[in-house]
Length: 255
Image (cartoon, rainbow, N blue to C red; front, side, top):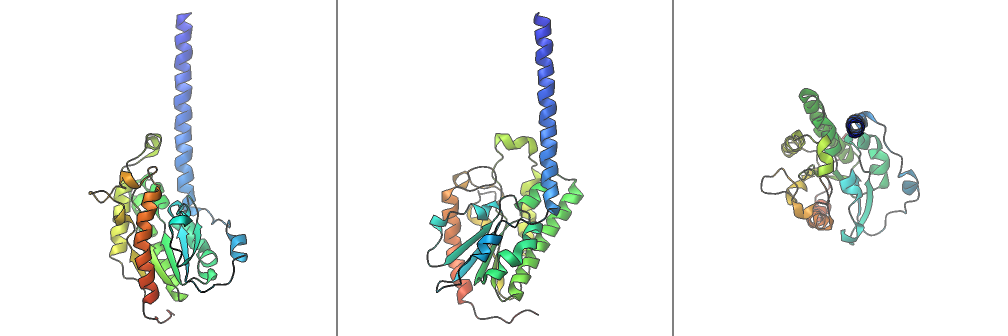
């Protein structure tokens, strides 16, 4: 009897391991598939119903979950803030909806914070392919800055907010190369030349530990997301940059 019980337990263990492996493989495949997935149309109705711009400067926040979860309560009331964040989105998806969800809303300033989902996928790929995804991520962010500036909008491109130490549930799908990829892309963005009307806002540096590669515990809810204290810190950085962008001299429209 004990023998059969042990066999049963062994079989259950094998089944659980296999199920976990399949779930991990599917999760990784889904993350990589997002690099070529179509953009979401979730904001189409909200955009159509948006009221004309009033007396306050209009600011569009657009990007991934770091934008989507930014609490309206901590944002400055001196600006009309329109949040167009989508959790899990890649920069390629963002690029597809950028005109409809940002430029077409007649903003004075567009703030973009995106790229970590691309780099999560990149960290799970072969090193050469992962570095190519990282390069494309930085290139796409520069292209978005150019598109916004060409439309006569002021654009603030954020550095990619670094990850925290991985939570237990994330470790089976975690690659330590993610932190290095984020650091590489941020260094690339900091070295970039931006078109007139566009500039870099270093939101990541406001939240890191001394190593410069890790989201501080005091600002995290999990490996990739921020708590209220984190968003309060980001808002402090954002306010001064929004005002300086609005106070900047008018620029020539890029042809």
